[in-house]
Length: 470
Image 1 (cartoon, rainbow, N blue to C red):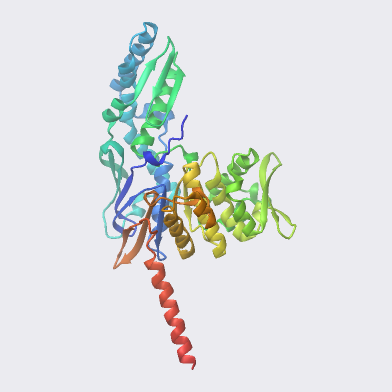
Image 2: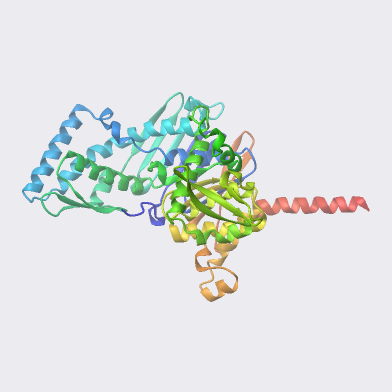
């Protein structure tokens, strides 16, 4: 199965109305999407909403809940036509599409139920009305995807679909099924090409769910993914892992009363430790950062699970949760970016936390390599001018086509970022609402005026202080 997230697959826009502090906001995602702005303007809110949408996986095991009697009868008839067609060596493509079409039509309501659950878990709320802007009756979430598809959802005391166009027929016209013998069918989608044995209903359902994965990846890439394909690395990572991974409280953890994103960070640690143990993480991508942090890492199989140990420059060997704070903040982020497997979508709150400016510069290179070499999609919030300046330099670097010149400057080929791969959004407060402004990223880099203005203010203030001292 191919990677269903590729740069070419992503044409996706999120539009919200009366959500949180936003009266209206639009975000169009790129392989690297950066959200900047002052404190308490809604940066993390957008990040968490994106994550909630990404993990709202349709629950196929309860699909009978959505089927009408008529649709159930149509499924039985389509199934019989497919099995008969295979035996008689007939063209069965239309029969399979009839079968798949019924499931695709159920998707909006299946996704809606998953989203309702995800929003409550991610934001730790009992009622989705808590996400509605003060003074408004309801909020709207609008998704625009490929083939002209869209989904408009209303949030209030409950959550419902206002309107949708799922481009089902457009999609079905583009995909292909082919029978190879009496029980083998190949499927050619936009992102998945596979061949399966189909001899019973269970096999046909497996094929159908594969088609649905391809469909969602093409229509709404980054959203409604299998949950392990995306990861949110919340702020306060150093404290969370020190608490949740400590042996003395492991037996007390039941999940009750704990923030869902924090629990998922703990799960991510064990997943990445396992990948590190299996050599499925490109450790060379993070070695310069580890060197800057004064440490190396190694996986150790211990107590039935894999743990990560940190060997420090002072010859101490520490379990990850006992490592210095800078390491606890950035290590899981870096390993996720360097993973050859999932997560493919990585959302990060303030990756600069606890990092020296030089470490932030090195981290920017890891981001570039993750996008260019591993096809990751990265969304992060930041207050760091160091990271913005470093990434801006990597964008400007993309205009240099000579590998020799890149090396002369101290960079590798995969560390340059094409400007079309980046979207940067500045959030600012305007009276009683937050405004989202898309910044124009060019071959010159990322606009830096917002950070430069603050730096100028500080410099001017210092000059006035020195003047008053005379």
